[in-house]
Amino acid sequence: MLEVESVEKKFGELVALNGVSFKVRKNECLGIMGPNGAGKTTLFNVISGFLKPDRGDVRFRGESIVGRKPSSLVRMGLVRTFQLIRVFRQMSVEENVIAAGGGIEELERVGLEKKRGWLASNLSQGELRRLSIALALAAKPKMLMLDEPFSGLSVSESRELERIIKSLRDEGIPLVVIEHKLKELFRIVDRLIVLNYGEVIFEGLPEEAVRDRTVIEAYLGGNGV
Ligand SMILES: Nc1ncnc2c1ncn2[C@@H]1O[C@H](COP(=O)(O)OP(=O)(O)OP(=O)(O)O)[C@@H](O)[C@H]1O
Ligand SMILES: [Mg+2]
View 1 (spheres, rainbow, N blue to C red):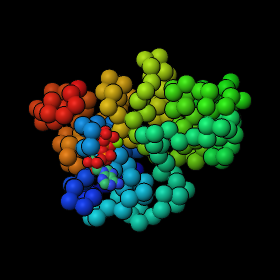
View 2: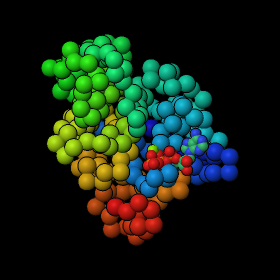
View 3: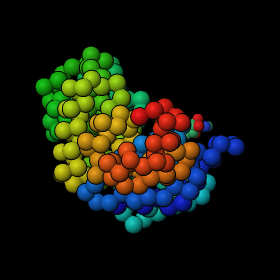
View 4: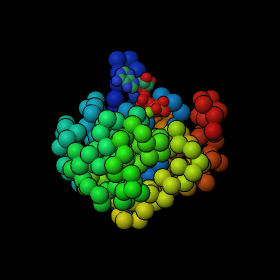
């Protein structure tokens, strides 16, 4: 589905991504974890066309997509959400989804159909997050990338989002999810990669990650698990 190969990205002297390679398979939810500043969002920005890598290749459904614009990638079905929620707060839920090219169907998939008349600014954090996913779904994604979808959510909101993410995966949309909240992440992913200082230091199952010395050290040296 997606192949990232030896991607490198520098900001001046800072090496944000240092030879990152991994694959996302069909029908899987891949988790990306790693301490603050590890390069997770930069990796999303490279894949989704917001940043051009200095080296390396990104292939989506067999085709190299390096150099393509974000809008062109969205048309190809490669769709992302942002760490900071981007919706029009002064518009209603329904107006937001229509502006994104969708409708009631996308709101139903995230359980917001009853709130379609609400002003987005009156939604809870969990509802805003679900609206941002509805807007992504309006683009008819063939793959969905979510940057910290659980941040700021209560336990019950997180449970609801877990159900939605799992149902998207079961419908056949592969997902890549960046997340610091590891309990939530571990409940939704099939596989994980761990980034640290711009390098993939682990690839495997969640239960293997928590026993991995390199992973434990990266977190103990950083923000803690
Ligand atoms: N546009 C930019 N210009 C300069 N430096 C940047 C830019 N974007 C990111 N960086 C730096 O690159 C490194 C990786 O940042 P990135 O945002 O990818 O980390 P992250 O893993 O998403 O962190 P977090 O968990 O805090 O969201 C950081 O040191 C950051 O300060
Ligand atoms: Mg980030």
